[in-house]
Image (cartoon, rainbow, N blue to C red):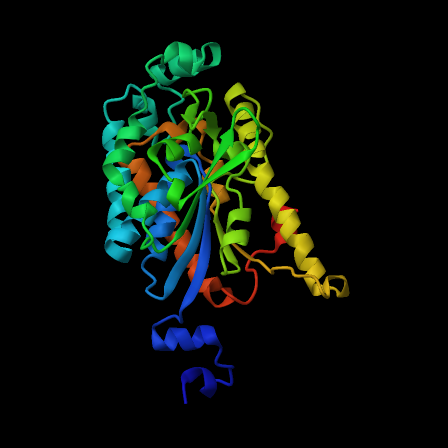
Length: 360
């Protein structure tokens, strides 16, 4: 008789896991948002999830920095399993930090003294911010130089992702500039250009052209889109790793704060629409109206740290100093640990997010 029974308490599945020291097998799909250097938070979440030997991933859909994390994760899993994925992610973010080490966009002395992760007191950032508001990337960056391309080329082997032995269904979102529609690149379509297109902010970089079409950041039409997981995966569970806060209590007042909030709202809008659709389908399934309809129930889960993200300025998305990245990684690991402890048993059974309260 265990101590819970002796105390008159029911022995739940959660308690049984604690006694056995091992969680039962579960499978989930991942939906990874973008957010520049804030994507290091997602790195930490993934790093902790990969520590779970019985937690597997069927599908991944991702945008922008999330797309980079997803591509590196898929490559690492294919080539070296869980440990290989963790090493690949760590190497990728280390390369990002190295690539930006000699960039003029660095925290100022004041930022370093105060411990701020922003670049708002950096003269180089202030000049850069002004230039990007007055000139297009076709004017201030005519050679279309982007250091992230080389980092990606060093970090992933695309042939491994395209091969049938890749253990996950990878979906990367970009926005078609001409049509305004979302484009989803799946495993056999993944390329460096596809990943770069998913992270192409139009005020910073020239549109990425693929097969005669031009693409911008996928966040405009799906940050990320959920429907690829619904259509192509058997697993009903979708774990959304949030980077962009859904809500802000304080009214943005500076130009940078206003622009940042506009981007957050627009980047979250497509996700909110899909969550409303999921909530509607769930209501149909649970009601008599859904009888006879071939509807798929989706269980929604979420990992986020809105408080931390709200306290980070928009300029911190460009701060790839190793210390700042590691801090976000560690916070991501902590949030994933908290989510696993509280919600692992919900996987495959129910949503651990109140969709109406969180998204509607």
